[in-house]
Amino acid sequence: MRIATWNVNSVRARTDRIVDWLARTDTDVLAMQETKCKDEQFPYERFTEAGYEVAHVGLSQWNGVAIASRIGLEDVQVGFADQPGFNKDPEAEATREARAIGATVGGVRVWSLYVPNGRELTDPHYVYKLEWLAKLRADAEGWLAGNPDAQIALVGDWNVAPTDEDVWDPAFFEGKTHTSQPERDAFDAFAEAGFADVVRPHAPGPGVYTYWDYTQLRFPKRQGMRIDYVLGSPAFAARVTGAHIDRDERKGKGASDHAPVVVDLT
DNA sequence: ATGCCCGGTCTTACCGGA
Image 1 (tube, rainbow, N blue to C red):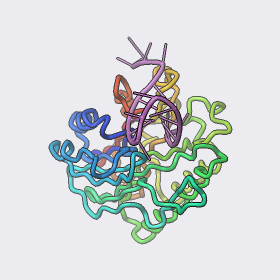
Image 2: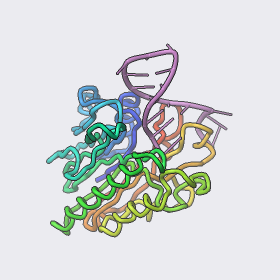
Image 3: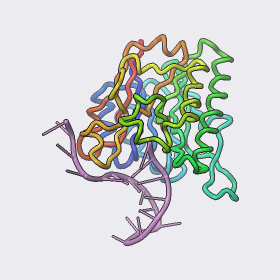
Image 4: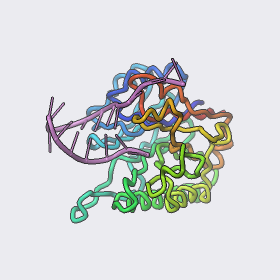
């Protein structure tokens, strides 16, 4: 079984590329983030024709997460129980965004996650990001406490670079989001809760990234960030036989700014 | 080495991305 996560940065702008990639790489399950469309705009037919069922949640042109599977897709859940909401206007009511969808595939409870960016360290979005991660960790800890043998995979764009090795230049990110200590603490809390990074042992750094900014020749200069992760419960981690980051998929015209992260299971 | 931003929209300006 092969499972992958990919921030596709618009599923409509890249449908051909995504469906071609699925077929070419023999991937059974793909968690997508930043689909950037409403449910009624999602190109379901293209995935169905290729043999994949899709569960998607998209409420506007922002965010949007999905899981595509050719090995079944059960018990779809939009959002996690304590998922916080957000509103740019602090006076207005915070609403839950399309940043989390869960489904059971091949015996694995998969969550496709798009963690809030945070924007600036002084922005309310940063507070939202930290709370979002804390609530997810609390809920995920509960899922595992209720069933220590559960195969759970928390996958997606975490928008955190947990170590200095995970960015091309730590000095460049001083005073910015993604590398601050509170964000790193929030990310590390998942390991403490029993969810391990199953990719890093198979794709060690330095210089190994999953995202490269479109500007300033970041990709050819190999100036990227490792912010997309597959965190697995012990029973999930035990099934992992290999993993890699498909850097080639970042090449060429029409690429997402993120590469797919691929995990192979028994 | 795979190229000097790219999606989206209430589109020709601006928001969000990281």
